[in-house]
Length: 299
Image (cartoon, one colour):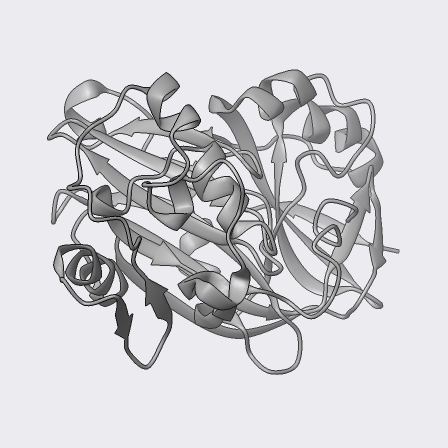
């Protein structure tokens, strides 16, 4: 039988040893499903579970999930955490300085299995966080209107693939000391499904395979390479991580309103075209997974 206990806001202290998983939307009948689908600030709880089959794990859930299961789990009280929720296949805006705005200082997003987390800087006050689904990078860069010139950080499948199981948990946390957001991610083997007090190991027991962190508000090597490719006159840019193909149009880049951008498909870069380009002609080809892109959604 699974043993449950409260962890609270200091879950980050255990991230190097204990697997982390995001349970929202994995359980049916949750009151906040509509809010989760829309994205934005919400209230969560982080609890720990110990099970002979699933092993040790930390579970991020909505308040109603924990409240409904509290009696079954024999937990008298839990400490709540306010955080933004970045839905799969969508984008949300967060303040660049939440300590000034009095906003949440955490961003949770569904578990990753081939997906990417993309951060854009929109002026001095706002960051935009997108959860791009694995196997759909070309389409979603276009549908989410992600602008490569604004990208400051990308957490891609290549960052967390550990060679055994391409699973990860990721979150953003604001560091008051540096005044910057950081992307934290945990390479993980195995997955679990939570329903009430019951835990089922789908590919478990879960194991932590590594933990990493990098700044989200300042351009990293991947973002800089994308910018260099856009600024270059060369048709192709290559480095050790991806291949990038420029638009061959002689027309100079200009800012277009969304309607014009949607209609004009011939002169726009690949990620802004209404139809996705051939993956072999895009630097996203390295992000594609061998298995089904729907596996994450079905978990």
